[in-house]
Length: 117
Length: 112
Image (tube, rainbow over all chains, first blue to last red; front, side, top):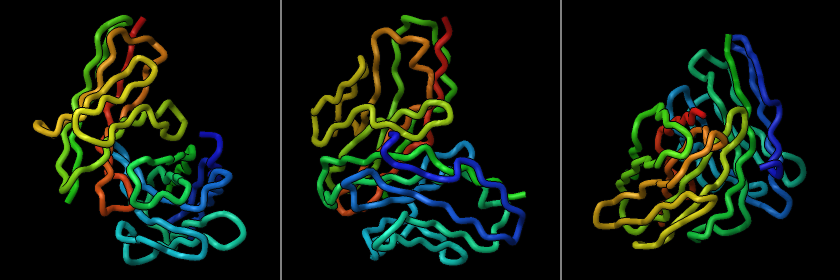
């Protein structure tokens, strides 16, 4: 677990502010996945990225949410103009290039707990 | 679409009791199935997995068998310990999907 680094661990934002969540994948992993966990819910897939490419964003809300994974640096999940309903735990996972394979090497980070006040 | 249903928690057991956490799924094709565990304040850790029908995944005394006929992947352990207290998530990955589909999680509490 320690291989995928997410920061900050806890983030408090007022309504209308922006939230930036960072994820550094495990060494050797080039694929990053973001999930959201609402209270009392399971994790919901949001987006899948490779370096400089968004591969699947089918789980991302159409507005205010964006994600990137630049050539250098961590993956960023950005939420603009946050609302109370955005309060959740956001988890990042990484894997080696195994898309389509059933032998998944997903490694999850410890998550960022976003609270919107 | 794909979905995972697992038993509601919390599940409270005494140490050394037998554990079953039910998980059923709906998916097209032949998904891979997983159990993840989340300890307080931590991320998810893969506990075990099975990639085809009748496969049995096992780890740390936990087992689950991929039952295609009943679309189930129930988690079992013969004798639980206090240290097993955590939230357990059943998940699947369909052949055409990029992400995992998770159940809502089952909070397990083991009392000494």
